[in-house]
Length: 274
Ligand SMILES: Cc1cc2nc3c(=O)[nH]c(=O)nc-3n(C[C@H](O)[C@H](O)[C@H](O)COP(=O)(O)O)c2cc1C
Image (cartoon, rainbow, N blue to C red; front, side, top):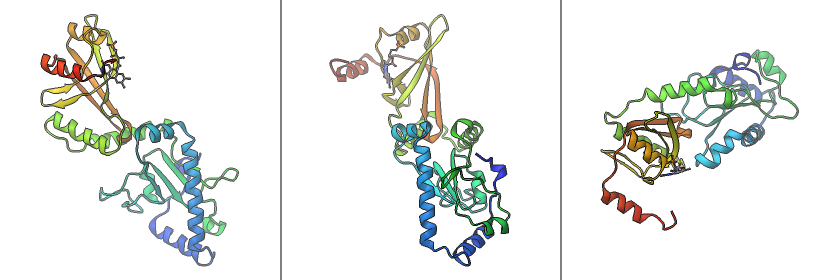
């Protein structure tokens, strides 16, 4: 895989001239170019679908995956999403040569489909393009997901700089709504960490029952380890992780029992064998 520094990124004028050359003297028809683009996109998707991370994201966490071809809609060819209204794809398949804006693309799956670029274009625009192994129609030019930690951090830094609600509960409800809207399955699953009098932390998954101005409501068995630890030390933390939104939410506070009435109501709502 070539690094971004070793590949040419073209500006708008060059992209226009390349298109004119392809469809003028070089004789490509729009249909032919579309067919080549389709083949590139299909083989890029094939490569990602075979990858572990994509499988996880597609099948367990996300309802729809967005793939942009050449430039994400709404982006400027040479800059990124300057209006803030462009879409944020999960994957980008650049064609011929990547456009300058693709340098800003921080999401892991970035491919280039340009095997068909004729030598005359490469020479005229002094393009540095990757090699296409075997019969591949496209090559990955972004970092692989596992090695993209700094990019993930950049995205996270961008998301935390957004305006937030004054009341953290309001903010949580907003993010929770975003998670639902993004099709994230089971966004109410969360990690609860507790520590008893020995101060040794323990964590486990639990389910959020609801959230209101008094806090986050969840239920458990009074005979469980977490219940014992909380009776010794009420301080606990919750953690939600919504991968496709690149968002995690940490909640810290002390745990109180809900009213007997509410607890009984919940208990009687459970199936008999729970
Ligand atoms: C997705 C998921 C959701 C869970 N939700 C709850 C829950 O809401 N309440 C609960 O007591 N245990 C829940 N559990 C089980 C806990 O993770 C844990 O195994 C159990 O409560 C015993 O924990 P403890 O020994 O730390 O007390 C859930 C487990 C999973 C995997």
